[in-house]
Length: 74
Image 1 (spheres, rainbow, N blue to C red):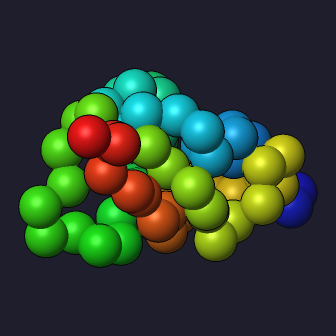
Image 2 (tube, rainbow, N blue to C red):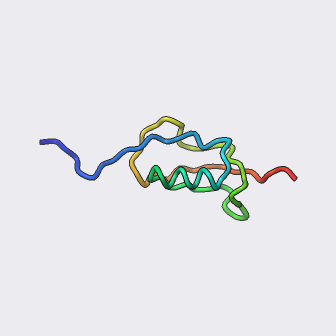
């Protein structure tokens, strides 16, 4: 029997163009961890402009997905 216990994969959603707060919530629901660049000073209203794991790729739960966020225009 070749069953692998405990190996669950999830599909990476499109985080780009999402607000950081909403993306963080979605990542948590999928079992993913967002790593934000730049981490200092970011807030939930920043917009994600890039992600380092392509949308639609299947990864294991707890995978870290790096994202770049920019501040809202003032």
